[in-house]
Length: 508
Image (tube, rainbow, N blue to C red; front, side, top):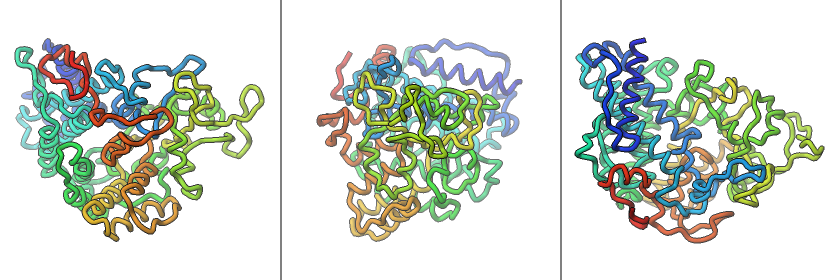
């Protein structure tokens, strides 16, 4: 009970401090304090778990994940003719017309800074504990969690307030910190955390799962270094490759036989390819996976014998489907065209006609059969608690390490045979034909095929330039380069006038 009270106290304080930058009234939730708490690692982890839960929204169906996918050529949620799903804020992002008043971006900001604020509060309590010397690994873990939050903030909004205290002085509100300086902060924090985090080879992987290991941080740094030129103006390909090597040389990871195995409920804790993820257990009210609820067509209730009716929201484009060869097993993760039961029997609508999924034709008033479905988190073998599945949420996989190293090596030297071998290793797993040579274009497309709906596509498109120059179904023109970052939400500037709006967006 004491642990639960303390955990709730920390969460509430952090949310109050960060939701709007001015809601700073301090409340007392009891007599617990760092001097009487955190006597064991288990007590400390009872608070750290809340930070993990908040960060998990970035890879689930929370708004941070949505703004990482909306605006790309692999994710669309059209309004339905039946009246559901229409959201002007989402359509703004899809069409690259985001304004500071965009509600989806505003909610994503709140989610991410709640995670950062919670981490700040937990860190203050951990460092104030008389037992702090014995909690170095947990402190390092929490620093890495906070740094991850700032990575996403920097990626989405560029220049953001950099705050490392749990309570903000209302008479000294934070200013906007340059994106390059936030990058340096994230790099410094993650690098410092490495010193006290255990290697995956030095823990009981079943007992330790799903907490961050050194390899999880190496993988996070590899992702950041791959995008360093976007964030700082200076490429860091060598560092990206070195971080990948730090993961590879452990020998702890390899590719699953099938890419879909990484997302199956029945494949939990096999630790073969997944480097970092978020564990869910809806049966114990410990989170849940709602991808099937938000994605699938209503008739999939019958197809997969689901205990709920899916909402037919998240969809993908024809352009995403067309990237795959017919022999590529990854194409089988997309539902398109005539639909059947698992035994091949046609899946019939109420009018007796077979359900046929077609591309989205109307962004505002689509029919229920418009939109292809990405079945990344399979419902087969999943245990359900209502509409919550127990598939763990994947953050980074070993295939990302291989493709990140391949791109970094190719950008250093386009003649790299190692880079080609790494790409073909990932393609070979899914029975895709082997490439004879590499180009930036087929490197980008391979990442799009492998990581569809895993939150990478926006970053990748910005790095390769296609976010600005390419067109697809409902994005029909060129995009201004300033839209590579989102505007600071209006409500945040209203709450804190010291924040400076990003270039290109209207000032308040």
